[in-house]
Amino acid sequence: MTTIDAEMLARRIPLQGTYNVRDIGGYVTTDGRLVARHLVLRGDALHQVDDEGRELLAAMTLRTTIDLREKDESDVAPDRVNARAELVSIPLFTYREAADSDVTDRGQFASLDEVYRFIVSKRGTAVAAVLRELAQPDSLPAIVHCTAGKDRTGIVIALLLSLLGVPDETIARDYHATDHFLAGEFYQVILRRAEENGHDPVAYTAMLGCEPHLILEVLAQVRTSHGDVATYLMENGLETRKSKTFAPRFSRDNPANRRRRSRPAATSREPLVEETKIVIQLSDLHITGEGDLFGKVDTLHSLKTILDRIEKAGACDALVLSGDLTDKGEPEAYQRLREVVDAFSRRAEVPVLYLPGNHDDRSTFRSHILDLEGDDDKSDQVLLVDGLRIIGLDSTADEGHHGELSDEQLDWLQRELSEAAPLGTIVVLHHPPIPGPIEVINLLGLRDPHRLGDVVADSDVKMILAGHTHHASAGQLAGVPVWVATATAYQCDVAASDDGVFRGVAGSGYARIDVDSMGAYATHLPVAHSGELLYEVDLGVMQRHITGGHHEGELETTMSKP
Image 1 (tube, rainbow, N blue to C red):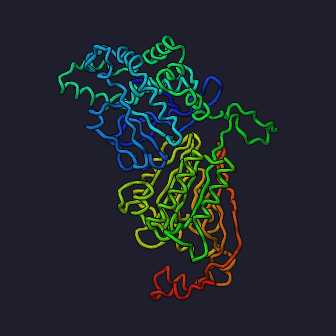
Image 2 (image 1 turned 90 degrees about the vertical axis):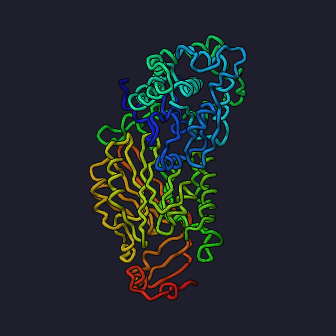
Image 3 (image 1 turned 60 degrees about the vertical axis):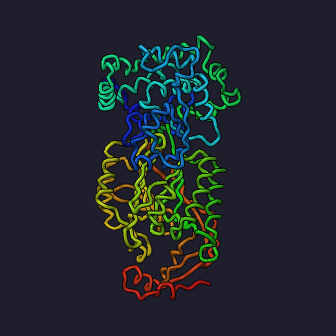
């Protein structure tokens, strides 16, 4: 079995039903930059991806799936990815199209060397077509895959990495890692099928290797015939202007190149190489299907205003929407939300994690936001942002507006946290696991929060993010910092509770979470706070409504609106 370092292991995207889906980001180029993470994945066949895997791809905002397989392969095993990703077929081994070749069947190749030489010399236009697709404005993030993610995918990814300036030895290491990920079950299945189809298993075994010299010979062949990879691609149809966009689009500045600020050793909290990730949290958006909330608040406009501010600031590595995305769970409301947020995500190249809240409808949320079957299942998710792991927990209850986490969810969370992430973990849920200043609202918080505390204690969780209360607050759970973000829709006037009323007032805000190797730090960012009264309700009536001791319609009839 191939030995593989921890950094390479961390590249694998855990999609059930796949073996070799990996992120090619993070490699250092010869000029000291970093290949951007989570923009291009390489992988094997996607026909067995389950719903959880599709949720993960949706959370990564995957936009393009490039399938390098032949039609006979894809017809038998079609991709199963989220509906938001465009499927692009670019067969890379169409031997029948090579008019000057004697090859009429893939089985006529005696070795992988022959296969690779054939692809480079006869299928250059198809290789260039893949990179042309990746250069499209709305193509990223994308996944390039074939059946094993080894030969066809290996050649395309090697040429892409070389075009970006990644050293040959790094490219060879990336290629060779496939041996590790495919060893075992995948190779056993391939060999069993080969025997069933009458092929020589010994000869087939020779075609399964991923020795580094194979991909190095591909790069040498390209340079011998064309001088360099860029010329090879351009002479096979990749436009010059597009080839020049790859480096700035697919690579980033390397934090290791930044000069560290000088501080006295006794007071410095900064490690030798500091990497900070910025997570923006929006909560309680309450987007309506049509019209204004309470006839006064254009919640969609509030969302657009905040996203414009975030985009102009340019400081956002991930966007988290922590529940109550809509006010009544209407399909039209989710559609309005998706149009605005997806447009921002594409422009800013920022992944988005969506979570439902008690105002959302689980089934409609799953079908209109996650592009999954519209059932009533909970929607827990994992978003990977370089070394930072963001875990979203669906805390909505089957009945009522309080929060709850099932045994199955907590067991799943414990499994996820069993292996630490390089930059740690942020856990997000809608319902706060800590009490706030308004006792009635605490009845609507997360039930049995100590159970969550038992799981996150002594883990790599650096902060828990929540929403729900429409005002900012902070605390801790089992020693883990907790931040409760305010709402983008409207604010709760906390001081009004002293007068025995719950009061909603006009105002908007969001949160910025900076995460580095030392911890996570939350900042409240107000946008507007006019304080205009939107509604007011007696706390006694509200408590009876929550505990079930109210009369039908009592809450609505006692809620005063100016």
